[in-house]
Length: 294
Image (cartoon, rainbow, N blue to C red; front, side):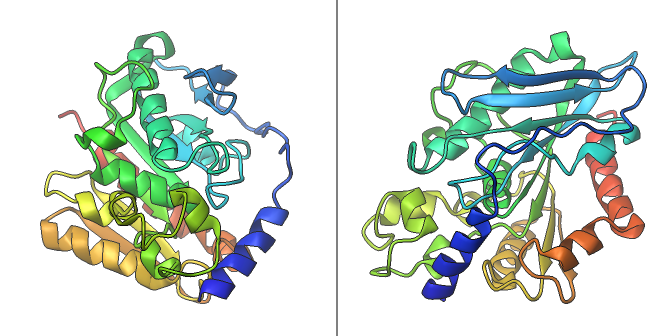
C-alpha cells in the first residue's frame, strides 16, 4: 500500500501542468459576474476565482477545493461550474502546497478563504448563511475537515476576518483521504502524506489525528454527500466508508455513493459523475441544504 500510494501519486502529479489554463465556460448564465485571481491573503497561493450569476437576491455559494496530493493542482477548470445555471454562485480556491508550508496551513487557508468570502458577501451578492464546499482527493480531505472542524481553534489559523465564521452548511467529498495513518503507516517511506504532515506520522501523532476529519465529528456538523469509486487503489473506498460510518453514528446526515468500476478520479469516475442522474443528485443535495429559508 505504501509503495502504491507513493508511486501512483507521482504519476497523478506528473499529469498536472505547472500552470493550468484558466477555464472559460462556454455557456455562462447571462449577466454572470466573473472575477479571477482575487486575493484572500498575502501568499501567492491565496487566490480564488468567483462566478456570480445575476440575481435580485443573495445567492448560495459552492466553493471548489482542488486535489493534487496537497502538493499540486489548481483552482482552474472547476467542475462545479454547471451549478451556475442552477442558481448558485461558484468559487474555486487555491491553498498553500505542502512543500510551501506543512499542515495545518492547507486547512488554515481554506478557512481564511471562507471567512474572506463571508466578510465580502454583500459586495458579491452572496448568501452568508448558505456556503457549501466540494473537493476531490486532497481537496476532498480538506472539505471533509471543513465540515467537521467548526470551532476547532488550532485549525482556524490567523488568516484575517477572524470575526467571521468558517462554518459550511453542506459538504460534497469526492474520494478524499481521512485516516492518513492507514495510507502512510509509521516508519514508511516519504510520500505525499508525510510531506503534508512534515514527517513520520508515527512521530507526529497529534498532528496526524488533527488532520483526520473523523477526530472532530460532532452531531451538529454539516450534512455530507460522499462519492467514491470501488476500484480506487490510491485512496481506498474504506477511507470514505469509515468517515460515513462515523458521521452516521454521531447523528450527522450523510450519504455514501459508490461508483462501480471507478478508480481515483479516472475516466470511469469522470464519466459517472457527469451523468444527468448523478449531477441531479448533486443538485438535489445542495438544494436541500443551501436553498432552505431557515
